[in-house]
Image (cartoon, rainbow, N blue to C red; front, side):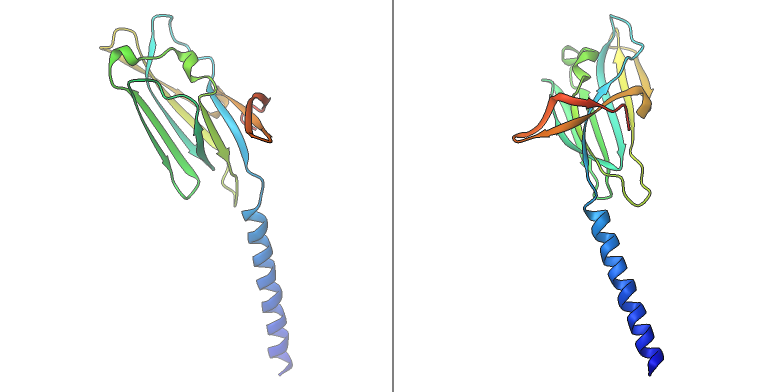
Length: 164
């Protein structure tokens, strides 16, 4: 009889530990980050005609600007892996690389060993016949932690974090 009581107490303690650890994981702070495409080796004549961001341990929270003539697809997977893909539908919709400054807000959520990673691909062209793809890693991007204000997030008062 004593061994049953002993196992019951151990089971209760384990259950409480699991519940509390899940509560800590579920309520760990989520950071809001502004993502910009950093300095990219493109010529003055090249224009951006497409982009793709793959995000691990995060989701797309806000898209700051959708250029006219662009098709944008966002996939916020429930596993905290997200993808955003954009492409111009016509040549006249191509944008300058500066248009990708602070263009997307991402909610970073690292948990259970899943680390925040952003990989980007930018598609540029000069003559709209040949395209060039530029692959970027987290460290190639400009990532700023956003401060929360009473009315939401403030990109104007971002805290530089460079992927941290």
